[in-house]
Length: 145
Length: 145
DNA sequence: TGGAATACCAACTAGTTTAGTTGGAAAGGA
DNA sequence: TCCTTTCCAACTAAACTAGTTGGTATTCCA
Image (cartoon, rainbow over the protein chains, first blue to last red):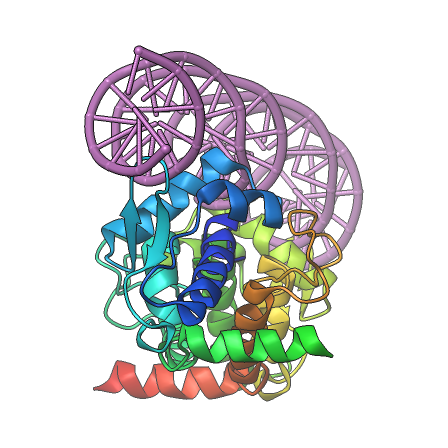
């Protein structure tokens, strides 16, 4: 039930990209290595994570020297749920109603399903109403303290 | 991030035990095999799951023939969080503050930590305010429809 | 008192997922 | 042409999941 490193590293990378974006929206390309070293994350692994976010059109890239990664839009236009969905899949506790869940034969009315639905609603509530900008503000505020 | 079968089967077993308990609080022992067959769950696996709930004092048992499992207290006194905690561990998305999380060196102020905390609060909110009786009521209501 | 029924328990296992690593190809600037 | 960067696919060790196997300990009942 834990958030995997994929989701975690993805969020951290988005934060660094968001800081660069706000500083200079027109030219905010960051080199992967910079983020990887700063955050002590395996560069190769982070690259695989960030490429997923590119496919989801949350990030744009430039190749070659002077290349790098940048947010595709303003941090306030990127929901945390979008980032996590791409990296973790649907962020919920699942449930018997899932089409790919063959483990439960009860389907239509399962006790655990009722519990799952309740939890899933709460999770969705929180991450769909949270943008990268929102989290960044808390983050920067905390950093100052 | 999905609820594993452990948590799911555990909740389902608790539901069956709760139904028996409400019917006759004094003698509500259910044989494991009955639940396993009814819910189409491996008996041996379910036994391992249910034994964890016994250790957590949510269930009492009687050995020998005429033996079985019963809730240790009224369903309204058992929180969903207690059941899931025993089977899934702390039900949250984790976070860098976790003492057993060595993957994040940032610790004190991590971007992803802020997101995790927000989600964790919501999850806790839902399962700590939900008793087995509450869920059972929804379950039985749905069954009638 | 012996057997059937039940709970209890630990060791094993196949398959999946996680968290990466390795090794290179393609693109672009100097 | 060389260096820097993104891009991409195949591989891997370790952990976790979802069980299975094979037994032991209790208790009831005929």
